[in-house]
Amino acid sequence: MLLSTFDIALRGATVALLLVLAAALFRGFGTVLAGRLAVAFAVGSAAHAVTSSIGVTSKVAPALAPVIALSTGNAVVFWLFTRALFEETSKLRWWHALVWAAVAVFSFVNCMWLAPASGVQFSIIAVNLLALGFIVLAVVQTVASWSADLVEGRRRIRVFIVSAAALYGGLNAVLQISLSGSGAADLANTLNSAALAAVVAAIAIAMMRVDGADLFPAAAVVQPRPIEAATAVESSAADQKLIDALMRLMADERIYRHDNVTIGTLATKLAIPEYRLRRLINQRLGYRNFNVFLNEHRIAEAKAALADPSQAEVPVITIAMDAGFQSLGPFNRAFKAITGVTPTEYRRLKASAA
Image (tube, rainbow, N blue to C red):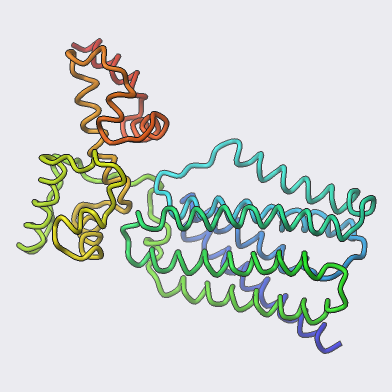
C-alpha cells in the first residue's frame, strides 16, 4: 500500500513537471523545429508516466489505450528530437509522421485486440522491443553527430539530456520485457517512477542552466557569412591570425577535399587545441556545425565548376567527388540546402544566362 501511494505521488509530480516544461518550451521555442519536438516529447513522456506499468499482465482498460499509444509513439518523437538537436539542417518529412502513426496505431491495436488474443506478456515484449529500437537509433544519432557540434554549451547539455533520456528509456524497456508477469511489480514500478522523476528533474534543472539559444537556435538552418566575406569581428590579433591560416587551408590546400577530414585534423595542422578551433569557427565565423562549415567550401567549388562552360560535359558526380563529397546523395541535399536548386538545375540556369 505504501509503495503504491508513493508510486502515485511520484507519477503525479512527474506529469506536472513535464507539462510545465512543455508549456515553457512551447512559449519560448514553439517556432523552432527542435523546440516543437521537445514539447511533443515532454507531452509523450507525461503519457508514459501515467501509463507505465512493469510486471502487470492484466487486460488494458479501453480508456487507457490511446494514452498508451501516445506513450509508445514517443520513442519515435525522441528519435526525431535527437535529429533536430544535432543536425542543423534537419527537417520533418511526411514519412516521419507515417512512422509515428504506424507505431502508435500498432500500440493501440495491440492494447485493444492483439494482447487479449495472443497474450499480454508477448504483446508487452513486442511493443517494448519496438520502442527500444528507436532509442538505439537516437543514441546512434547522438554519437554520430556530436563531434560536428561547434557550440560548447550545447554539446554538453545535449549529450546529458539525450543520454539521461536514452538510459531511462532503455532500462524501462528492458525491465518491461524481463519482469513481465513477475511478482516484483510494486517495487519495480515504484523504482521506475522514481527514476523517471529524477531524470525529468535533472533535465529541467540542466536546461535552466544553459542559454536557450544554444539548445534551440532561432533558425533551423544556419546561414553563416559568405566564405569570401568571412572576417573575425572584434577578434584579437591572435585569433585573426589563426582564422587567416584556417582560410588559407581551405582556399589554397583545399583540405575540405580530403577524406574524413575532422575538426581534429584542422586543429593539428594549425597547432592549436581542438576546443579553441571549435570556438573560433563558431564565434568568429558564425557556424554552429562543422559539417556545414566544410560543405560551404565544397559547394563553393562545385558551383564554380558547374558554372564553368569548359566543364559542361563533366558529370555532376565527378564534380561532387572532386569537391570532397563521398556520394551524390549528400552532395545534392547539401547543394540544394545552400542554393535552393539542384546541381543540374544550377548548371542549366548558368548555361542559359551565359
